[in-house]
Length: 400
Image (cartoon, rainbow, N blue to C red):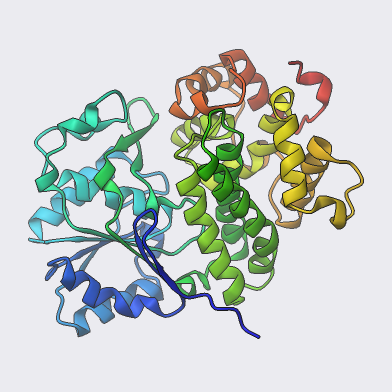
């Protein structure tokens, strides 16, 4: 019996979920007053069939839709500025954020900036900067994710690279979260296995770091645990058979759950992945996937109870893992990465070793660092980075 994988939810924003629901985009856009929407996506998707079909769908409904796709894999401030110019020059009246994390993040920032008088960096997530936003100037925004990883479609931040410092900055405002999400897992069917794996691991790391972050937030913990359970069950299926719509649907759900859960916080994986992505332009999900066990091992002193719980949720004893708690989870993580073809080291994806100390220092300055289970110094992050470059998971290297 086929499971029901369609639903309409209102958490954390309104979500139209299920195969084929992209067909509801034109009427949804009209309900937001859009007559001439700008569909914003990343450069890799511009000529893809799913973009062309979506534009045709909008035009068939009488909407004068156009595409902006001058966006890098790690969106930059210039990408946002160029998108704002395209929006204004084209006389557009709404934004459709379409794609993976890069397209969604850039589109969210563009929708924010089309009605502002201050520069983008005045809205970095520090203090009360978000109060500077002219809310009335923000463009109506609908998000359509085409990967299952970042969960940016339900996030209140946009991650943008500052070109001069190469830092990833969080642009925050409560209303930067799209007012409507159309989550159609059929749009992810064309994802190749390596992107399916990297984005899926991104969703897992969001859930994992949120669960391990200190603080009292049972709602986030519950969502994170269920998200990890879904990734463990369905990511191998989606990786093996990209047309498995049940697997694709559950991975899309897991991605939104990860973004909802990490309101509690993230941690050292993201603290390192952000400067590495900003400086070397490597895929965020892949960086997270590679870094995960190295950071987890360093955090071992603070993870005992959490890993006991997670090993039970993932049913690792029934999956043949004789160890329990931390050791079982660590072994499963390494096996899971290997199953998905994730490289074991950063060196394998071309990350150089010349700036280890500098990257360590940048990691301490990243907002995600505050959610790590134990405080880590620049030297700690540099050591983790060095270990991840050469594949050193020896426990003796990770003194508490």
